[in-house]
Length: 562
Image 1: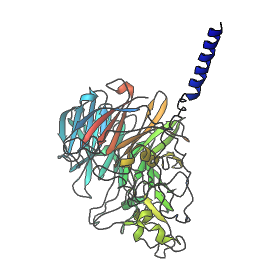
Image 2: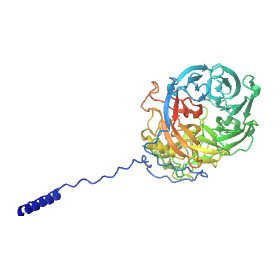
Image 3: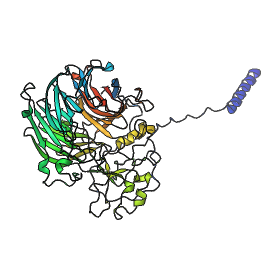
Image 4: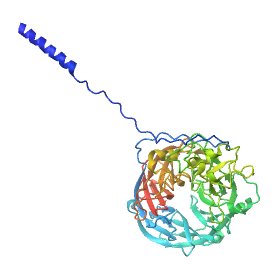
């Protein structure tokens, strides 16, 4: 008994000693936080905010995006023309009856017709020669099995043609449009075709034709179509009229009709009204289709980049990503627009690309560093005009001297680096602010504001990623906007069902920055034209987005996965 008690005491003692000498386990480590967006370095000094025009409504700040969002867009297939950097594909249309894609090939002046029955294996069926009708095909549209193509004349002031074909590429009729028909579209019922005739000057600016809008009545059928069915709308009535001073009229010795250059058309869902972008003028024309009349011109105003949520990276020489507020007004200057309806009301979504008049005979382009800034409006001009601040930003000599004393009282920039929603009267409902640049900075910091073959940040001084293409589509009762960036070669997707708070859904691209356009390894570069295909018209049974990629000369098809 004494022995067992002693043994037990010894075991207890050994246990205590082992416990005291044991190495404790390492403490639990906290889970690492998800990385945040790329930090934005500030410039060397903070410029003083300057007076600007009446602010436009600010954008809703961009929400934090998920690290690995679900892929809303998935590339299905791509067709390569083999023509790089020469507009091998610029605008696309789709015919659901034949399941064919129609693509403008300006390099060859052909209308390329692709078999899209299997979007993963697009193939060229034939190319229709447009040389009998003019020097350059610019646009194509399809409605009810009828194809319309816009073809420009060789001379700057020559009248272009609208050519009608069947899906097999057989010509059915052609009529004259205005000078440089740049975009063609149908009304929803297919009974009227409209053409935006840009009327650009020649390179010497010695010939400057009037811009115009063509309307073609198809109600009598294509068989008897003649010039008698065509109405040409002129802007000459505005030459002596009082127009909003925010509409930019500034070409050398130009009338209003010469300076207004129709770029793109969107038609209301009921087919009653057409909205036409006048890009360089930073305005819209509103057309009453039934009465064949231009009802008015609407100035789009300016975006105040000094407001919260409306910053921009203004320099390609600031050492990296630097999105911040600046005393600059952005001219929206949309290229593509699209119309959609909410509760019976028409709204317009715009891709705010920006464009200057830059010709051999006249150019408005300069850089902020080369401006003479008003010392009262800009007391810190030397700091602002440093190349790492605003000095490198491309601006205009045509707008900004508000008091006519020879110096610049307000700095303007081309485009708004955003997309916007406008109501039917041209009033701004919502703008995406600096969301595009902030999302790109987070997702693609090594290629931020770059274009194929260039270094990152190389486009920050010149319209950034450059929103160019836009379309809308309704899927399962929700309306989505698709916006293409010409320079970054990507596609933004937003849910715009809530007009005052559109939601960012996805950003996608099929671009390989390390690839070559010559051998096709660069992928799809510079989306220029979009066509949304609803599920009921799609060869796959699901909604699609068809894209014409101008620089790579490719046509790509994306599956939409809501």
